[in-house]
Length: 176
Image 1 (cartoon, helix red, strand yellow):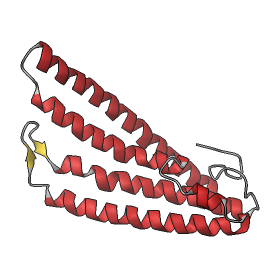
Image 2 (cartoon, one colour; image 1 turned 120 degrees about the vertical axis):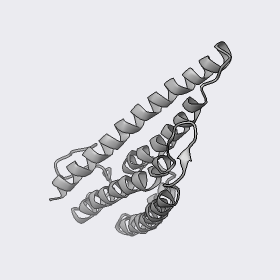
Image 3 (cartoon, helix red, strand yellow; image 1 turned 135 degrees about the horizontal axis):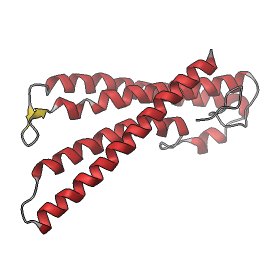
Image 4 (cartoon, helix red, strand yellow; image 1 turned 45 degrees about the vertical axis):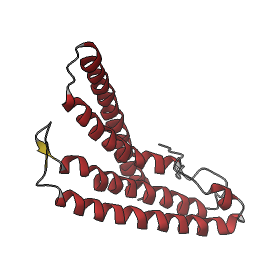
């Protein structure tokens, strides 16, 4: 069961990571286009700057799932590593609970603000502003999956006495 959940979480994390990379690449092209139209043609394309900003916001929130999965977010490993191995899992649980609380609040508040701005249009693009704000609840929801999957792997390892191995390894040695 853990293997199936781990595989599904990894698939979702890979998808969000790759989508974030594609959106960031598009944003780079748009910014380059903006620079070209502004400084070479002398007639800036204002829509490209706004769209690039929105894509960067989406990229940041989507890639957060991979950052949580890999443990690349601001970490308190320094403190957790000083705990005895038997107590380390309790510290990880505390951190997981705090992160899940924050992400849940961000999902809920992000959803509410997305609804709140759904009637507003982005002038240069003529699309609802909610398309950009939807990055908050979407990215945080995917990050919740990553945090839970990472913690389940840590719990599995703790239960099976694998205190020193990476929390990204499962019983069959799979990693993201």
